[in-house]
Image (cartoon, rainbow, N blue to C red):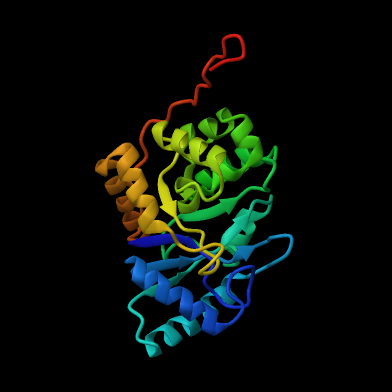
Length: 256
């Protein structure tokens, strides 16, 4: 398996604090059947900033430690970029990294409770530059859960999204789990990733999540999500299926 969103680098954000903790996370990934992790430390976050060159250097150091520890997996450098108006300039400067070498996808996150008013224009400008945004964990954004058409409009315009394994499995609550199912049903998501931070409170749960997806949506959906991660890593065009709006069920006399 390929995990396209993981906070595995030591001492750079709210992920592992030490190299030993990062190696423990790498061992857990190996036991899950994960062969490649795209490291996505926070960039331009209120609490953290990780520049492109620093992430590349730290991933090289972590890969060397993983090799020395004889752990059978590889880490690729990237970032989880908090959305801001100067992203294109940061991409041009090499401060914002693509999701894999030479590809044209970047992982973006919104603030927890809102979607900035300039997001649509920014996504349009990124697409003009040949860069495809991937929205991280939209199922956990308050504005999107309250008004799913926000996400539908983005996806309809060619933006991709990534849901989190713990959202699928219900570890973030039933409400988020139900909304995540709706995103899958409506072709409003394209990747499943762990967003792992540690081995206890925020573990991988990727194998479990794929099993849940198979139970609810069939093996074909599992193949599609896994294949998109492979296509992303191999600098190929990611599959996107025609999205559908999420329709809320009507209430009659206060009863669903």
